[in-house]
Image (cartoon, rainbow, N blue to C red; front, side, top):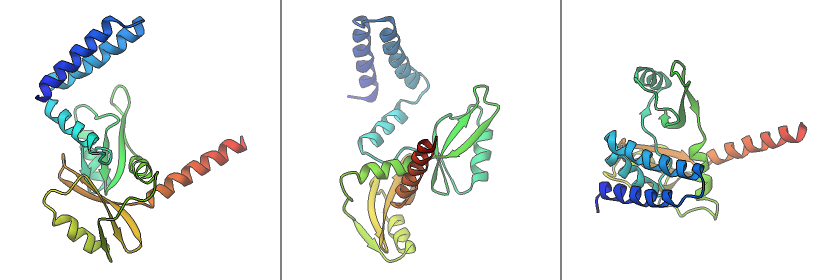
Length: 200
C-alpha cells in the first residue's frame, strides 16, 4: 500500500469518526486532522511525510530540516525564506535550535532547544543502552562514523569514558555526535526552576 493509499484510508476513517463525534468541538478536531493530511498531499510533501514517519518509527533523534556550521549561515537562511519554518528544528554546529517567528513573519529568531537532551533522557530512562563501538578520541569516532555509507538513525558509542549518541539525519545526509552529558544540563535547568518556584 502506497503512502497515498494510506492517507486516503486515514481520511476516510477520520471522516467516519467525525460523523459520530459527540460535540461540535470534536467534529472540528476531526476536520483539522483531515485538512492536515490534505495539506501534506496538496503541497507536494507526501513523500517527505512518509520519510518523517519512518524517522518516528525508528525512534530516531528529533528531526531537523536543516544543518549549519555557524549561526550566521543559519540566520541568512531563515531571513531568505519567503515563509518562516516556524517551530521547525535545525542544527547549528550540531546543537539543536528552534525557528520562531512573529505572526506577521517580520521577526524571526533561532532559539537554543533541548530536544536532544530530552531524547537521550528518554533513551536512558531504564538504564544505559549498550555501546556499539568504543574510541579513544573524537577524531577516531569521526573517522568511523564518516566511513559508514548508510548508518542507522542512531547508535550509542563511547569516546574515552563518555557515551555519545551518533545520529544520522537521512533527510540531510548529516551526521552528528551528541554527548550523553547534555542530559545533565537539562537536570540543572529543572533544579534551577524548582529552586525558583520554591523561593516564590
